[in-house]
Length: 415
Image (cartoon, rainbow, N blue to C red):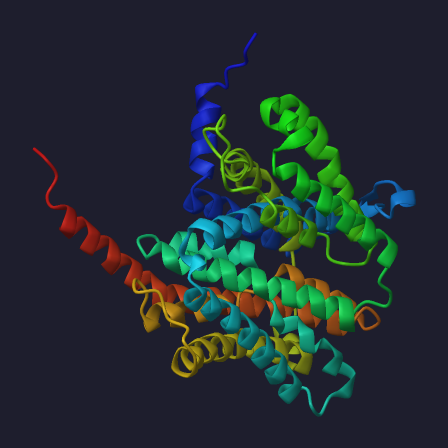
């Protein structure tokens, strides 16, 4: 007996596979969280975020907010890693000259904001430890904003942002591991590496693994616990668990065997994207975006918050745009022919949307200074809103012109 998905659910899933609908849902969830966190229901909202559950023996007794940031977000990062794998193997990033540009831009977009934060906080030694906060771009929110304001812009711009943000997040996680983590548990990380090796071997779909290719139910029964085990081991190792999602996405097979119509990479993206856009990301946004905004004067008077705003808004812009421009002038790297420097300028502003990892580093930086921590989190939100608004001011008109040009090229509608 076969199961037929109801037509309304099919249409909903199809709409969530597009960036625009998913982006609007994500932003709506973030706005709702912000409203609740600054309303009489704030205590109830905070109680939900900090409610803890899960097995302590597996180091998984976590708050609801942590489950969303480390667990649900790993689903999104799996899709990101998977999409990047497709681009590196079959897409624009096969060209090393084009792939190098967003990678170098990401590195510059981490170094310059950190330096800007240090410059602002040089006279405040007690807040210097937050230098890593403005380094990270929130890929989920940045892609959501681009989907809403950048419709009609070349797809290469999204690929540029995707690559840059993933490299940015990997760099930020490395910074956390080296500078903001007291201990790294190498035993669990070795177990995670072994699990990833098994995952990669199974993806080949040859020999004993061919049975998974031919029997989808068996494949789900094997891959689901394996993926959870890898995620849990990465988490227990002291590394941000979303890295497990990126790694498994990058190990997905993008080629097909003779008995396959689509590769596992494309099948999983098709199935998982609605889950990510319709559930994982909105829940994460709802549980992460609720930052109290009281006492704005006190926030902006704190050098930690000021350094974060300067780093995310100005530092990211200078680092990403300047790094991209310098790379094209000093190396063989090249800008995609569909993109112009105004596109990269708008994207550079958009990279100042820092949220998930920025808030995580803030927690690690100022765990013993509650007032500074609150100001730092408010600074992250203020900077992210400012960066999104500035990016929309640059990319929005370009998007409108691109859509008008496309309509003109298509000609008048048929009678």
